[in-house]
Length: 120
View 1: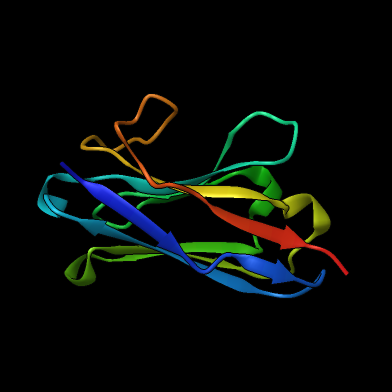
View 2: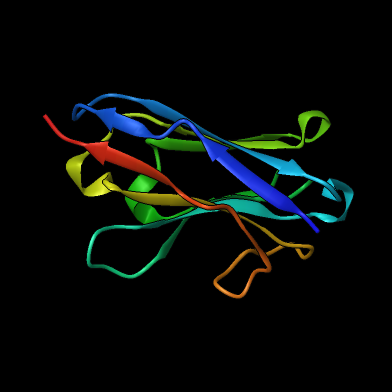
């Protein structure tokens, strides 16, 4: 059973940066795609970014050019570097992993979530 543990959330001012990390414990070799979802207050969960084991990435239009997803397979870790943060980026960010090349709402493995708040 894969366990995902996130870290790196917090409070940041608009225009600031944060880096989220997600470590996959156990059975990482079975994982292909990993990614990040977020759920803003009162809104639906949305995919922010995803990356396959071989490094293919995709991003939500709202974060392109500001966020970068990467992974270190040797460390079983995926990262989300968030720059030029905006108040509308405020959300609970959750790590997600799947054995296929795609992560979506039906993916099997989810982290517990980490709060990101962008406010002055």
